[in-house]
Length: 443
Ligand code: PEP
Ligand code: MN
Image (cartoon, rainbow, N blue to C red; front, side):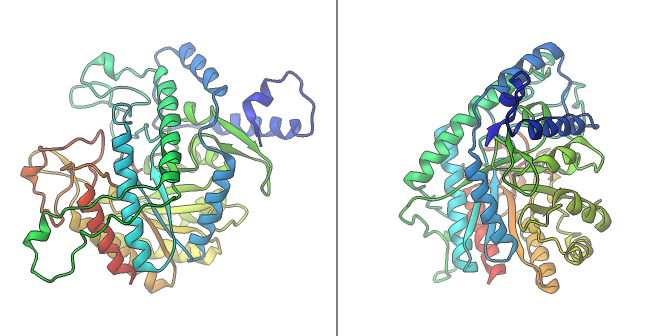
């Protein structure tokens, strides 16, 4: 496969791939000319342009062969022969891009995957929100102080000053460098084997003696496989590192920045740039579906994003909230099933269950998350479709950001270790407990 920007930089290059590259470049410009939600306004367009030029010459972070292998794994998920576990931080930060943090997050995901594989009797495909999850969509453009909102470390800084919140295109280079080094570490840890956390359960001591508990873990690590993903959000960044991929049914672009990209709830406009950009990619794509999404819209997404009817090309990520999933999901599943496309049905039980605690913390309750998952499994069991995976915000770090679980984290506990840069994550103990709750639903 050849890098698109390098080829375009060749003056009047001939060569067999050249016409295809020109067509792809034209399609890319057309996609990016569409309205794009949630983009920062760089104060100095020239400086932003210079950064994008530099990124055009940067080495890809992921290899196309790895992405192709993930596509094959996801085809198995779509066919009901595997389960997809995707998770990690809501927002990665530059300061948090450390070996202990990455190890902890991979460790808790590996532990969850082991629990799910044992319970479901299916291989578990693991995708981390890692090595590039630096851009965040926001509900408001300014915060309570009237400052521009924090849009993730790739755009600006969370401190409450005008200077910190001013979008700085140089941050895209830092994000690229952090992602590249994180990916190197992911590869190294996967080759070595990843230590899973021995979750010492506070709640286990409160449990009735003899009741089966889940503080075993710690299986001997062997080589394992992880893929990386992030939200396809910041288009100036995403457009900069692309391969021309002529291996599929039509020439497309392959992202060199992540194996898997997903489109968020706030940027899924059918006439917008994000959907048009994703149409051009050969990577597997995820799409978040919130409560306002209609079955008719979803069928249009499926038609646009899976034109060649490739099993597992598209992952539909429902995030309806625990109170609405049983009502809103069935008509969507029925309509997509009738269309004949083999999508992956994945549940994000976090984003539809976010609320503010009495003491002012954005949080989620363990019970609501499990309830949405139970609804998701009920719906798919009833309709005969494969509940193919989950997408969760979790960390192996010992944070206090979400309520409930065996440790019974309360609102008063939240300030203790509320460390997230954006949305609240389950800590290691809550995450492993969640895996055991899902294991019950899988059996
Ligand atoms: C996220 O996954 O962090 C996110 C912002 O999700 P959504 O687009 O579903 O709100
Ligand atoms: Mn989030």
